[in-house]
Image 1 (cartoon, one colour):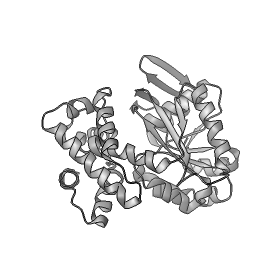
Image 2: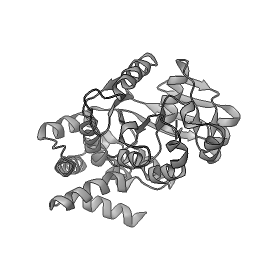
Image 3: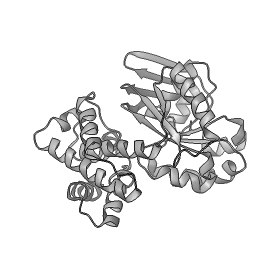
Image 4: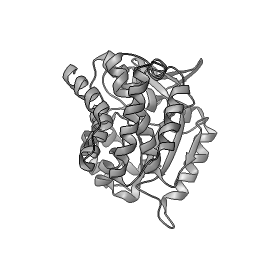
Length: 307
């Protein structure tokens, strides 16, 4: 599990609870705490504690070979994808292990495929989960915490990845992680981006949780507007989301728990925001299409100025 933060830490703890062998990567005080005291995850009143091997990426390369693992899961912030793939490129290329991204945005899988090739890339997304590090070595998570996975960029006839995906689906579900395999992972990634662009940047700007945003008389309209701009942007990738997708995603986030988005948590902690992979991804594609995205443009511009 590359990145044992709120999302990666939760899924790692679930898998460890089910008896799977999991190796974590982290850095700084969080890594030191994981090595000294193990990983503690508070999930809606349930507490999981596991002493799992944890290391820095440099130690990972030194102590393990890529093919020691059945799967490498990337749960890092999307801002780190390019750097980490550069750091681990030789190590990954020396093996054949599949790589699964569980990150925000639609641009992580292309970066991963540049290093390992499309045939080893699995796209994925975490759905209806909120999670963050509360203190070094400790993670809080909430929500249904589903996973959707698929062969990226699309499933091929007799795709060799399908057998692994089916195994993962069974393993995740047996570990208490609701999981499904999709034949069109890019479609699912874009639907997730509709939600992310709708609430993540605006939550960082207003410091409001998702329910406060979606039920606010003015901000709710802005959320819907930023989601609509994301639906429009999907055309640039040939995904072509519809009004139905827009309304389904708005209803989903409106009815979800009142959670702090990952971008709001980053804003509060003074960490870099995933703006480029969320709002930036929408703006680049709208520019390519020659269409305006005034809601996303404005919120993105103000946040960039603040940060």
